[in-house]
Image (tube, rainbow, N blue to C red):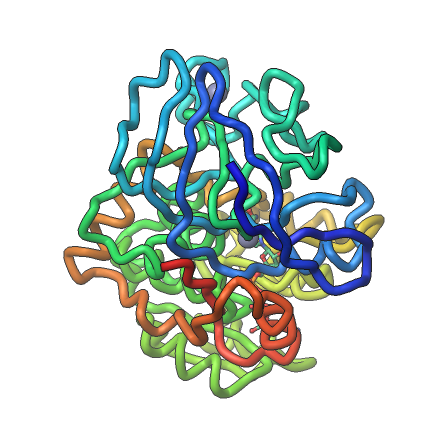
Length: 368
Ligand SMILES: NC(=O)c1ccc[n+]([C@@H]2O[C@H](COP(=O)([O-])OP(=O)(O)OC[C@H]3O[C@@H](n4cnc5c(N)ncnc54)[C@H](O)[C@@H]3O)[C@@H](O)[C@H]2O)c1
Ligand SMILES: [Zn+2]
Ligand SMILES: [Zn+2]
């Protein structure tokens, strides 16, 4: 079929919306008609050329929600008409990692996905016979996409697509960091650094876990206000003395759980230093720049603080994205507050501009 998509032709240049060929789904693959797609930093990072593993031409986009149109041979977990959320972090349910509750990092298709191909090593996207590579296994800046069955979460049809798509990346990453990676315990004290999509999700996740105190740290007063709306009990405008302020708020000891959601290694250090002696756990969700390292005093670890990282919030996508969306539908998560702008596919460049200007939390491309 022919369909419209936003193509990264060249690093640093605007995406070009154009018609491409999309082949029918092969065995284990699914054709999805996109309804909505969030515009995320990772798309911009790749488009800018800063990502050393990036490639072009490719169709960007990874925060998609849509409807299953057709299935390739052997597909059993979704059927025509199902509403699905796209997963850049798939769940095959068979590999050693999928079978282990300690991680969500599925091993099934990592290599081909990283190289921009579907699991059989080919692409379904092309232009005048020339293959165009997929991006993050999703390529959702497009009217249609073909994806592996193991990378689609079947979610409630009642979830509006423009809200459901936010669970494809940033929101689930934040919620999951608190709920599945750190497993925040009721009554605890938490500190979240960064109040973007990921940090606000972490604030909501801490609240859902029954945290007693949730401190949010950000440079922007407006974003701290949003954090309050998600359940933050205290807000700190970030600066030099942030760690001291956190220690003051927590009886001199630091927090039971801290979360880093900025991607800044200096903030990661603050997040470690703000964790409590004895058992404080610092969860790092932000993605640092290439070659950057985390600088901390080892004594902080010997005295009982711990650090861990979290990819996609530790969320096992096919099992847990539908559960998170059910909690949203039950009124437990305020997703509307995150949807700032609605754009047409042709306005995807505007989505990047709004993100760079920190205008709103998420712009969503509406295909309907
Ligand atoms: N681990 C994963 O799977 C995963 C998934 C999605 C995004 N991410 C990463 O998470 C990070 C956050 O993503 P986002 O979409 O929320 O980004 P964002 O840019 O919307 O939010 C970042 C926030 O950090 C704040 N900030 C900047 N410097 C700060 C400082 N010194 N102290 C306190 N706050 C500061 C900004 O004001 C902003 O509100 C990024 O690094 C992104 O790449 C990771
Ligand atoms: Zn797996
Ligand atoms: Zn993303």
